[in-house]
Length: 322
Image (cartoon, rainbow, N blue to C red; front, top):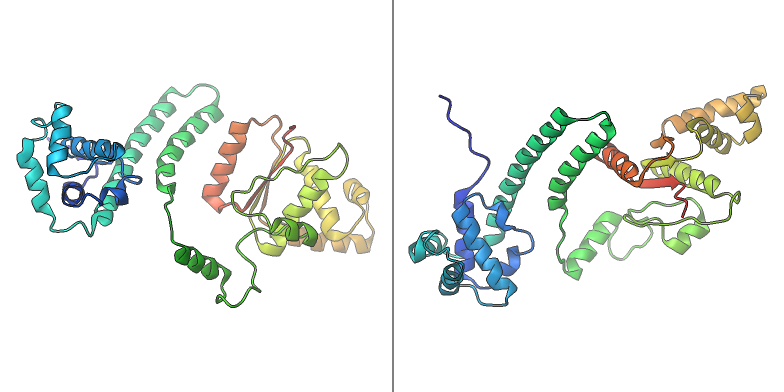
């Protein structure tokens, strides 16, 4: 009979984390926000780490005596092997210096186990899928997203580190301010000066009365960012068909009258300009989805899918009906 394969884990790293916490009361500050009790594969180590977190949340000191008392309070001390096992954990590491490294190993194996669980859940969705395949895909993506989100946590950085990253991304030493920062420019100088460009995670609502050019402005921003900066743009056009979007972009890029573009009626000179504009636009990373009546969950799912494939810089939704 084939031996059952155990899920990913590293008992030595788990013991090293807890041993570090027992010998250094300050070590918990380095791992509490990034390491969860469920990241521990061994149930004994999981229970001890949870006891450490409980003490930390109550602002109580963490050491062998207090952890043993907390485990006793929870009726788990004998279950984990008693005070003798805590003494063993202390003997595992001579110092808490590398506690963050040990925690990263434990966290990584925890995520890998979550991936295995997620794969099983997605398989179940596949077997039980109903007629709405999009709903099933959305459920599967949500499961994967929950696993991936664990890797997206951020922590404090010093101002020195933040400034170092700033100038590294700008590509210039601290004495120069000439280079553009890693943001998306709309291509409209006054608007870019006012907003400082479109920064990652910005949510900007373009509001105006009907027929005042909101769509035209949005399309021009999409064109400017994609062609001038090489940005990847996802455009959700909830009312205008994809063909109309293409016609507007062609008219804008070529300078040919939009009515002539729509009717396909151009002079020989206009045709040359249209072909040139078509070549430029075909190289632009603009992805158009003209599905009608998209729900918010549909937009999120499609944007997330494209983000995994192309790393989107800008998402435009026309329009939200606020």
